[in-house]
Length: 226
Image 1 (cartoon, one colour):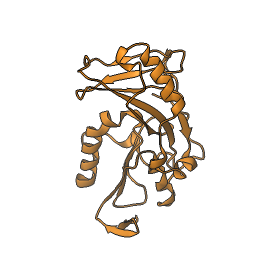
Image 2 (spheres, helix red, strand yellow):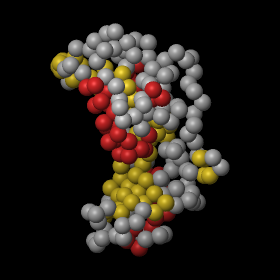
Image 3 (spheres, helix red, strand yellow):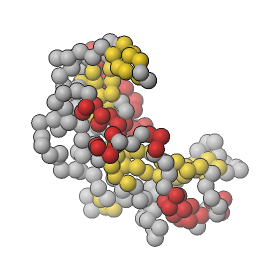
């Protein structure tokens, strides 16, 4: 197989012995760097907001059903006296070509969804009866089968990928790091069987597998992509 000797960063070649593509939704760009692989990815552009409070908030997460504003709020108090909120609804979905054409710096909050979330949460909490202190957005990386890409890139000897964890990146982070470390240093992941997460699992298909994500898990409404 081919061996990667370096990558170009800001016009300069960075040499290394091993390379891991871990660029979230933009990992689909690897299709253009390596021959014969297909990395279907759907980017889910989601807005979130943060309220700063004057005193600690009870440390309980709040998960709400979908409301009249199209929000299904998830509310997470922080030890810093902040309250982080996602599940704002109205996310935009980008395919591979659209992801490749947009930069991370362009991922900003949707003002209409910020207003909707402020209205929904403002009706629940007195301290939130005002504009939020911070508005932001992310691009969640979602492969069509709802499973991340973890493993060696086909046709290479020293290139790997770890991407596509959707909103579960923090939860998956520790085991992903351990599994990829074992794969790179020992030649095989011992803590997790990575065969189901093969980077090349879509490469021989002309169409992607039917997605398992959606607004329902079984018969239960779960809001947006799970």
